[in-house]
Image (tube, rainbow, N blue to C red; front, side, top):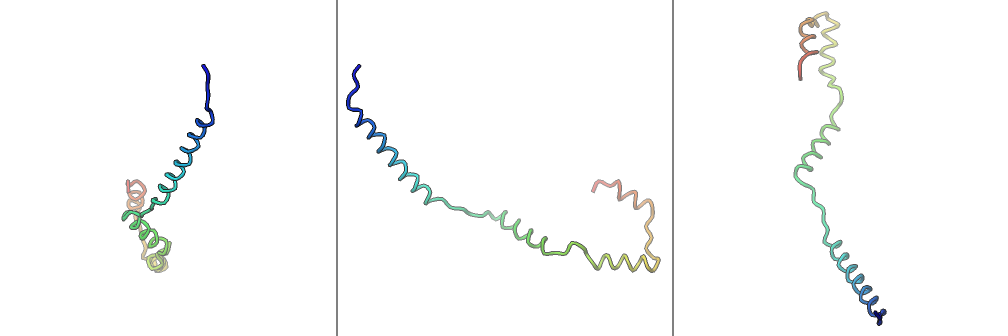
Length: 87
C-alpha cells in the first residue's frame, strides 16, 4: 500500500483544531453566574447571626442578680430533665 499526499492530511487536522478554538471562545463568552434566592436568604441570615452578640447580657445579668439575692433555685429534677432531654 502506498501512502501519498501526507501534507494535505495533516493540514486537515490543523484546520479542525483552529475551528475548535473558535468554538471554545464563543462558549466561554456565554458563561454566566446567578445566585439563587435560597443562597441570598442564607447570606442575609448569616450576616444577621454574625452581627448578633454571642452572649445575651440581659439574661446573664438577670440570673446573676437572682444568684446574689439568693432567689435563684433550680431543682435537681429540672437539671436531670434538661440533661436527658432530646432537644
